[in-house]
Image (cartoon, rainbow, N blue to C red; front, side):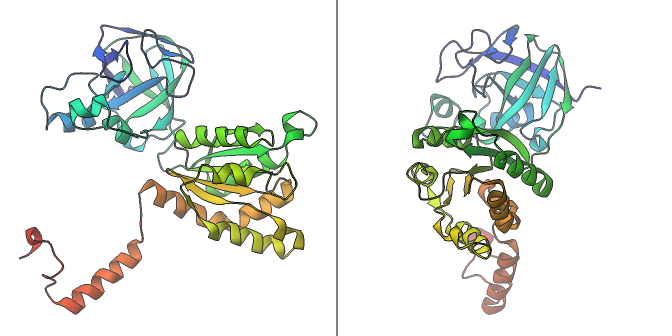
Length: 337
């Protein structure tokens, strides 16, 4: 049974501008739309928008054409607001897997200047191609595998020279991933090993944060040996530290061994992603993660902008109303009676 319909297919031969509608497009596995300037082997191979979002923007600017926001595909009848990363869509012969919701806009783009709205940054969907084929308007869209938008998207990086060289088997990374899946019902978007090299660690952290995963956990490289450089790599990228998480992990682990006080683990935020450094052994990594696990879902919601402190806001509002009567002094003129 179809969940939606493909309305328009678009491409562009040059980057930085709008796409134009085409009668059909050829979509290639792990590449994207043939002939499109944004095609490639990275995770944003195909871009999608829901018709509802475009219609809302078109109400403010009627002359917008398909592809104006830089989208490859326009879909109708599909509620995209609850689709999370990992969702798989079947469109005719093509199978897509969502890899990113929205994107980071660092500067005013040509598309934003012409449309007065950076729609892809807010509600755009990006996908990789699992099965290729030719797409054209009128094809049915089916949700093959649904991952809820609320699902925490996590990545696990094991930092170890010996694991990267195949000398040792990585046991910490899989244990951390398993804990995230079982306790937070998280989806593991990526898991792998990098050597104890600050540049390699930072590059992988940046790549994952730019994919807008919610949580990146590193395991290893937090001690005081010369090759322990995970904290330095993390500090080179984050916008803000979240020291309470690192302090809680050290305190909990120190109850078992004084060696925990030698940990230099960092926790911090890059864009909308929380990065947490853990020790490299399986036991220490899971022990440290369990110490802060309960705080992570709320942190993710706050970074997504889904919640602030609603229970405090409610109490604060009640106190202000009680103190100020009709409250005209704090209401904007448009809301005063």
